[in-house]
Image (cartoon, rainbow, N blue to C red; front, side):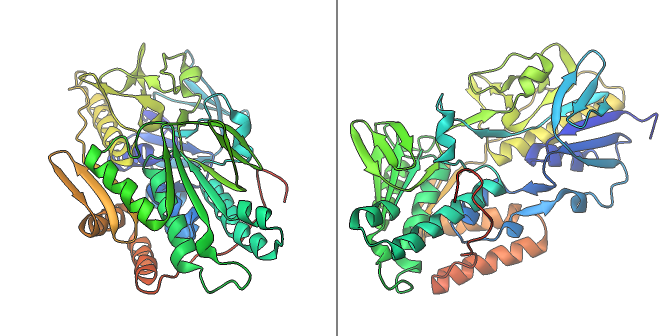
Length: 420
């Protein structure tokens, strides 16, 4: 492998995994670097946070995905920088990894718009650790409310705030409300979980802003029917362990989840590339970094613009970008130097609101309600990796649908962001 073309991929998300899959048999020596040992199906991460699925249902060990690929070397490490002159990637261990082609698919984290101190009290949802932290806080809130005798403190414990009403925020609010209204009643003796208050706070004028207005309106009505209090048009201006402030109103709540924005990794800094306000690399039409045709930026790492429209940071887009970059790399290995620019095929926006309620926006075709909910489920099961994951997720959903029971209501691990 010493004389083979060296492709280094940083990040085992949708874009990085798709690229490696499509480079099978290309004759390259591939090194995959990630700071976690698993590939994560992020679209269902909120269901881990809200007790519906277990972590193993939506995450797969990277090494198992490529166990039969002798051309792939997997390294569990953190990248500290890139030397574009020497064409090497520097790991935190001090080791340097040489490359002929570098693929930066490092993903994104939640952004707090200048209030990073809020993360301690309002965790976002991007990793399995985030999901288990939120799940722990959610379940402990009910347990502590059962022990609390002060009515005001109990009310604060049973108030849950989700900040940001994109798909993640809407899905979280809907499933937390369902948990309180349908799953937990009857299991506690001192509290009535149906008295829980679930708030969904959005600074913009409506929920699901990327969807058609009529679908957004439907989602808001469906959430209200579930018992969610939808607040739009005002941002959160304060977030502490005691609660949040919306405008002049302070709302006491002990569980807050952040779903309002994302910030790209430091990949743009590593290669000295121009970046947008979210830190994403402003790439060329072929997804390469300006001035560095040997470096690709994909997925949430890249700001991709086609005919004045920005490609959304969703899983289908990342997979398409990974497949395109693999095609370009293959062509280069075969001596072809010119390529058509990347073209994004939008497969629609999907979001679930609650039991039998979802919205699908396919442009001219727009669906809502039970049919959309079933199609949403089928689409997500289809994109899961492996028959076992598809089967276990389907069984968990069926159990929840028929019996109203969540299969992963376990309080595990210790708090990672603030003291117990």
